[in-house]
Amino acid sequence: MELNIYAYKCKRCGHIHYPYKTICKNCGENDHNEFDIVPLPKKGKLLTYTTLYNPPSDYEVPTLALGIVELEGGHRITGQLNIKNPKIGMNVEGKVEVVRKEAYNKHLGMVFYQA
Ligand SMILES: [Zn+2]
Image 1 (cartoon, rainbow, N blue to C red):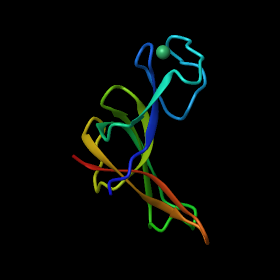
Image 2: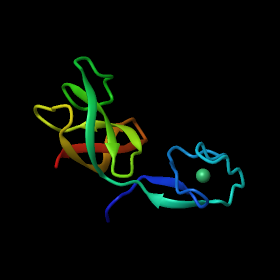
Image 3: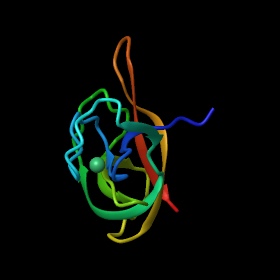
Image 4: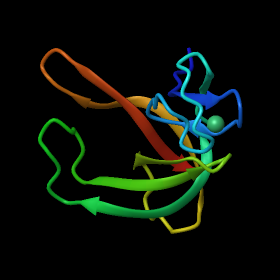
């Protein structure tokens, strides 16, 4: 099963929110039922990134690259990069994967690959 990250799309103006907001940032709609739950797009463009050379120990990677990606539709999210030589402006495609493990918890997040 393909995993998704779900976002909240304003029924009035179509603006996508992630994480959840009770008031649309674009048009001010504030009825809790006025949002459709939609999967975030997975394709986008890498806007910028950084590499952590000493990531927290529960990230089981030697170095951790984090990028800000503008997804199709214009929403921007932070995600982990699994790309050897990332370049600003490159096309990327995300997959929802386990990014961090604790003793009893697995944390899912978007991991981006070169598209
Ligand atoms: Zn709206």
